[in-house]
Length: 157
Length: 110
Image (cartoon, rainbow over all chains, first blue to last red; front, side, top):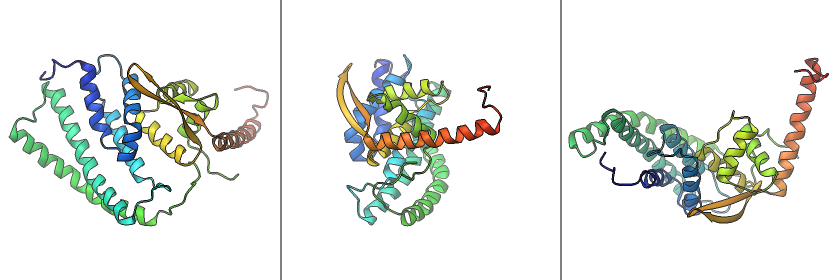
């Protein structure tokens, strides 16, 4: 392992921090340390990296929070769409990069990102997989944002 | 008060907070216990729900403490949250009563 000199918990903290970086800035500022505490409390002893399902759940949670209109700080429609568009591109790419890293360490016991050819392969594969998702997301989130009524004090669901 | 039925994770998060304020990890373990191990909330789901419940005014942030160098923030039910949970409980109880009668389980058999 290239990172064996680091304690497991520090490696895990760093990996959780990378996932939490996908949350909206306001939410991140208010809840990042708290969420990190919860994630670490829930992690079994000796865990070095987030499970795939947990990483996906964190990204999904980030997406839900990005998508929620906030009565107190309603951004302009343009800024809102831009943020969504950026997220819908970035999130699948980030998840694919994370998945590639997990696969690499599971299959070969180490990360292969240092090798430019393998990196190129990941980039091509990631683009091929992400592109349909991105196009779909642009269409869906565009329709979703324009059709969704914005109302304060929405009922719970 | 007319409201949409609560999804089960939401119902259980509110139930977990009904007895008193709890921090995030406390809510996760309590929900698992209340649901008899059936529902295990993950952090992403929990914080998305807390964000929504807070902005809807059903849950509010309570005190904070530092444990083992990590921040713990407690959440509590607001009066609106208590009212929504009570209304949902009443609705579910009414449904259960009818279902119990129609199934002929009124004697308490299951």
